[in-house]
Image (cartoon, rainbow, N blue to C red; front, top):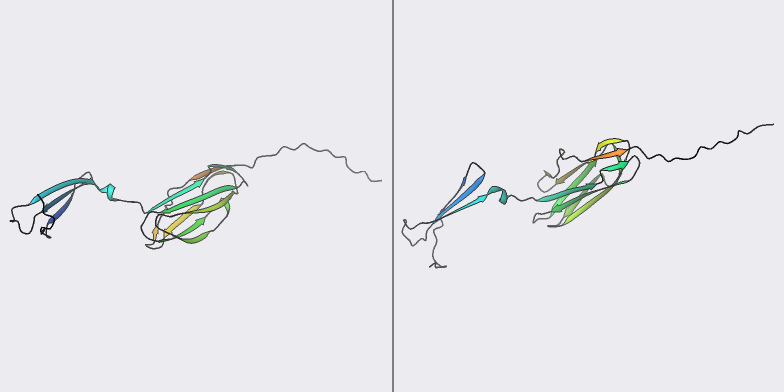
Amino acid sequence: DVDADADVDADADVDADADADARFRCNVEWRRASDPPTALVQWQSAWMSAAAERCDFHVRTRCATVSHVGAVLPHCVLVRNCTKMLQTISLSMESDAFAFAGDKYVTFRLLPGAAQAIEHVLVPLRAGRHALPLVQLTALRDNRELTSGRDKAYVYVSPAPRTSEPLRCEPADERD
């Protein structure tokens, strides 16, 4: 029988002990202030530390994996704000093997739970296997990088398709 209005000892000990396998065990011992010191209530709970971690942003890049030299290649970066605060994001893009249309540097704001798509049009300049342009996203509130350079995506660019035209033989003009 628990009295909801009863006094509770505010100095109760709460321990979080880390086990070797990254699990945490939470031990809570408490008593009412009016109870004798020997009347402790003990409670234990095990939970994973990974369950407490949460991703603040989701970043997804969409682009085809095969193209031709000179062909238009749509490229989209989707950023979702999973925090409970308004975030200011800066995006910059660098490329060697592609010409692109779109903003090279842009700063935008994302409301909590909102998403923003930034679209570019890429044009491959040479054939071969090339890394997609490096997109750097930074959350300006805490100056944190949202993308890493090690997560590269590649596109295979084949030479421009040849068009077969019949050979034309025209007679040379003869001058009189």
